[in-house]
Image 1 (cartoon, rainbow, N blue to C red):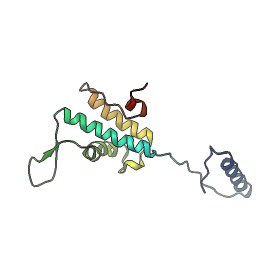
Image 2: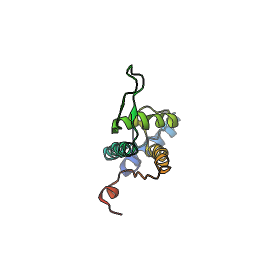
Image 3: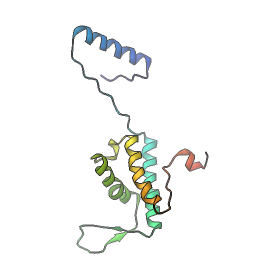
Image 4: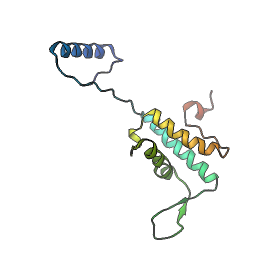
Length: 138
């Protein structure tokens, strides 16, 4: 059973359940559920991939397809190429997590730090999308 401890009624129910298990000498397992990203955060992440692709293309870099029989096949960077061939390899190296849906905010920030450093070394600043940055409000 799940209880959201930020909601008074659910917290009371959880306390009651815990006290009952304690009184009965039962074994229980507590598990903290990590809050993963929202739909809005997911959209911002994919917009970030587009920003990164744009800057890679502006640097004159091209994506080189590997494992194809045709040698030298390249293309411009796209948001999906950035996700699959830039973001995910960093994600796997840092956290051994295959799906972006399994990342929490802290992990996303660490991957962004790696990408930010790469572009920062080239004098380019890429901000993660936010309402404030998109409307130029501070």
